[in-house]
Image 1 (spheres, one colour):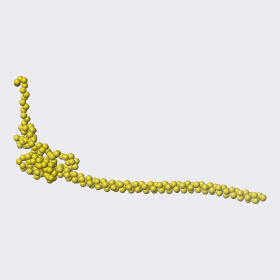
Image 2 (cartoon, rainbow, N blue to C red):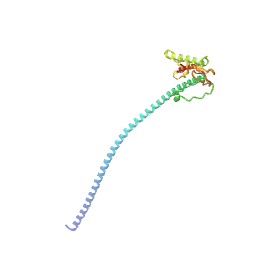
Image 3 (tube, rainbow, N blue to C red):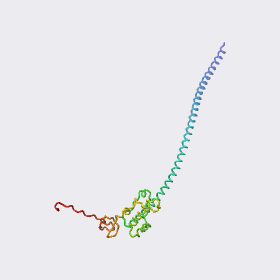
Image 4 (cartoon, one colour):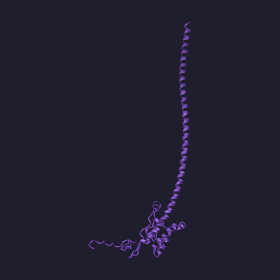
Length: 240
């Protein structure tokens, strides 16, 4: 082998070595890229799985939210219906209490006209549900018809006693008409029930309690309807 051929072969070996080195380097780069691709594929799969799980969770929460919204709508409709019913019932109560208040004011006006101090007390329902009493524009007292009969009668207390007796009799008889129950026995002044305990003041003629020492109208002393008898002193040894 001459020098020229040897030099040519040596150049070929060098080129082959360079090509092998480039090939090995390229193979390493390709292998590294393949590993990165596999990692990315795994990451993509994990992302897809997570996305599917989140989508399913979103759907489940959406169904829960739909049910919650539906329940809220039902509760709102129920609250509106209950509020309307409450307002209607409260209006009925207010109208009833207003009627009771008007009757009580008329009755107390009649009692005041008869110079009777006691009056029908205000009920708890009037304080809670009743409207505030409006001041009367006409100072004249409006007395109901049943009290006009009492005022024009010769003895008003006797008339009220007879009326109370008729009311008690009709209450004991179920066949009596309900319109006759005009007096509430539990809330009427004691003068209606205990008319026999009244006496007439000899100074002003007002009806007062039979044992009252002074008349509350004219402030004059009065005599008792049933004066107490004086007790006799017990005999002593000196008197024997």
